[in-house]
Image (cartoon, rainbow, N blue to C red):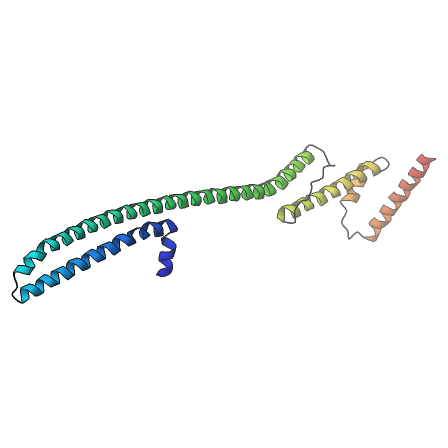
Length: 220
């Protein structure tokens, strides 16, 4: 509880409430005087003395007047201090709300920024891959898609490059062998399965020997 009040009440509030200390002391003195004088009058009346209480009655009324006046002053000061404290608390609350909104805005901005960076990191490789496929569709086999990540998009880009590399190799074979060998034979050699039999191997050997002879003849 003490910790709560130490946090809730600031230095300005402590200074404000410290102004009430002299008024409280004055009020305590007035109350003590009024009480003492009332007790004296009561004792006189108790023992049947009538004249002394009448003489002390005026003084008792003065004490009562002082007590009431100081009580009103204390209440007025207490009201002012309470209103000032409430005003400061409201001001601090508004500042806290503004700071909270500011921090929320900063956090949202940072979140949007990182989200944009992540989105760009995902969309750019996809755009490059789409652009590469469009280039191949238009007949450009020399295109190469840059691999900038190791995720699924990076694996897909690498597979695209490997596939395109095989296509380029086949096209080079067609362009080279097609000058000396029937293109239909070249096409069959390209699409031939790996598990070829002995007869096919012999035929292929003859083709390559013929091709080698033609190349030597051209060079001569």
